[in-house]
Length: 359
Image 1: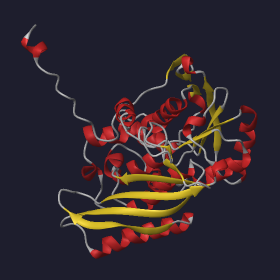
Image 2 (image 1 turned 180 degrees about the vertical axis):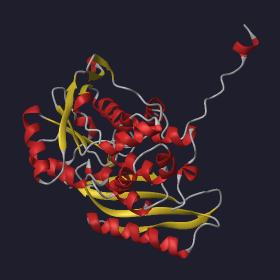
Image 3 (image 1 turned 30 degrees about the horizontal axis):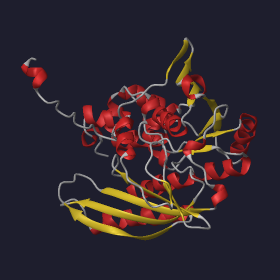
Image 4 (image 1 turned 120 degrees about the horizontal axis):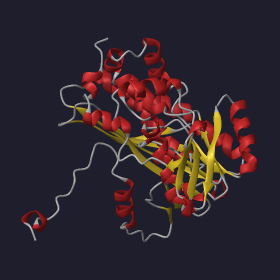
């Protein structure tokens, strides 16, 4: 045996962003859950924990905001609320841990973040009920980790694992709402230097509010209009990762039509300028769900009646068929992204601070 072969393997460093799905799967399988009231615990693809309170379920989620520095209060409330919305729950109680960088924070900044949180909570009917705030060492930007709690009637609970072979797969709004907003806000100078028009960058910045990152209305309409089998919030890793998570949670396959996936024009322009694949860009703001195929067209019509774009993008298949993407030249495996494309840009390219303009 050579000296190289005799050396113990050196663990690979984790990249910026979420750990790979297979790492998370291994960690989650090792979780020792002994409380019988835990209906849904840590699982790949399941957006929030579900606890049995007897007559109803309590749904709980925690999620940090790490890619952006602007409007983090608004982001944090809606990103956490989305994970309750896809369980069919009403987001009600929000808690936050707010860490501010030493030497860069003042009371005005703190008041602004609290105002964002309050505005976002009011918009969805939730209440800020507690948390922790401090100035801390080692940060170059504020970090806000939020937790959202809410309740759902037992018969209204939806999970990602509920997808069934034969279901239609639907998507609202398009991709990638959150990612486009992040890129436009954090990389404005770089985008300008690469020829992206000012009006495109400005529209992208506004994606946080229009079309908006909340999927609460999308989910509520869906539950009224169709027999929803599964809902999922495709976040870090983009739509492609969200689809893979759905398939893993449900133990199913997928057949997705690439031409049916609505890539928003601003997203396409920013991704082309930065060399990113829209399928791997953080996609909060779009609701991914499955329902019986004979109810899909009616659901799309119900969304459109409320001003929300929706589209059928594929179907759930048997697990042995795998996850396939149908392209013009044939079928290929659904792409897997080792990390989110925005995280890859920030990790390999210029850091966000160098992307911004002075104005």
